[in-house]
Amino acid sequence: MTEIKAEQNLPQIYTQAFDSFMPLDAGLNSNMEYIAIDMTGLNLNAQDKATILDYFKKYKVTVMEASFDDLKQKSLFDEKHMILNGILLSIKKVDIKSDTKVQIEGSKYRSGNGAIGVVTTIIYMDNSWQIDKADITWIS
Image 1: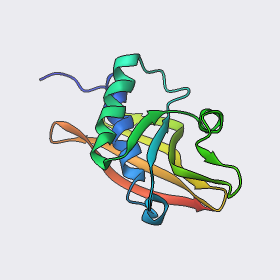
Image 2 (image 1 turned 45 degrees about the horizontal axis):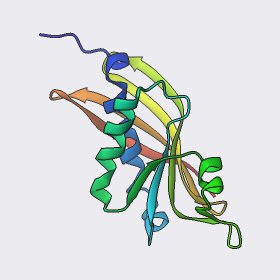
Image 3 (image 1 turned 90 degrees about the vertical axis):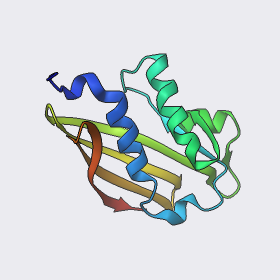
């Protein structure tokens, strides 16, 4: 049996974490035109990033790697209404609890008055990385 190490499976873990944000405060998803994923600071190679972005195509909207500043530069932030026309997912903290359990803190952002903070626990079970729980920690 091969040994499982969370550090070697971070792309799969990040994918599960980002996906766990999607059903929370589903109103933020309404009429979204895109999903932007901020991978800043997530030590991923180009292939890992492409795999994560590809996974989110299941939501049938444009998917891109972008930070909030990138979105503003691309004119994807509505300055007049102070809102994104899509959602921005980001991870702020990764806490590897064990080889088979990782806790991730992140956020799902639509506007200053439409955002949530999330803590997600991802575990290795039945030969795959799965969401154990995802809780909203703050709402704006």
